[in-house]
Amino acid sequence: MSRFHLALSGLTAVVLAASSASAPRAATAATARPPAPAAAPAPHPASVSAPTAEDRNAALLARLSRLAPAADRGVLALALEARSCALAAGDIADAPRLAVIDYTRPSTQPRLWVFDLHRGTLLYDEHVAHGRGSGENLATAFSNRDGSHQSSLGLFATADTYVGGNGYSLRMDGLDPGFNDNARRRLIVMHGAAYVNPAQARRQGRLGRSWGCPALRPQVARAVIDTLKQGQLLFAYADEAEWLSGSRWFGCSGRSAREILARARARGGGDGLLATAAR
Image 1 (cartoon, rainbow, N blue to C red):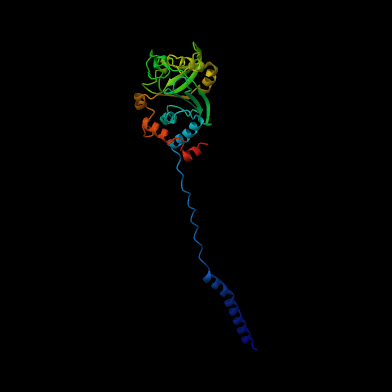
Image 2: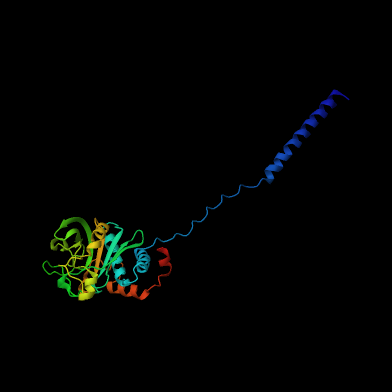
């Protein structure tokens, strides 16, 4: 074969080889898939609404009612409402302990309950005296006036302790303008007193009475005072129309004191899931 033919054959082989080598690359490019779209972000779970103050109070009420079944549910509900309204207004700190006095009960019965709200416990269930100007066995008259010797109603913040004429005593500041805000000037304090004697009360038909102070049995006075001192809360209740309609601490939830009382009393033990939430 001539040199020309050999050169031509070699050139043809090179062209065919080049064509064969490029074919797969072209086919691959023609059949390549487009990139997959980015995955959509996972949907966020539905947001859960934070419990309202009313929800929290309903849960607390369920627990307090179980702890102190003799206490009026309506009175406990009002105490929690007053506390919530004062907290919302910034007038008090979130104190863990709350004392509740129900002056609609006779003095011969326990009518003071001290709760630890943060731990959900009942600390004391005690007799407490009312002012001699407020009545005999039942307290029926209340005042903010110095010299009346009557008990005052509403929400109090506790303060410091001192030793005075009635021994170890606890100062209190009334937070209800017009109803108990003269407590300091009137020297309305918590203290022990020998006349707070349940056995004697059963014989004479009533406890001894103070000059308006919530006096306690001497055997428990110091312990209760130490539990309640320095910024804790005390709530004193009676079915007194002017106070119920005029207190600044009812109504921040949009309900009147009468509505709060009626609703709590009507619900009884049926707090359902709210009661479970309080456990």
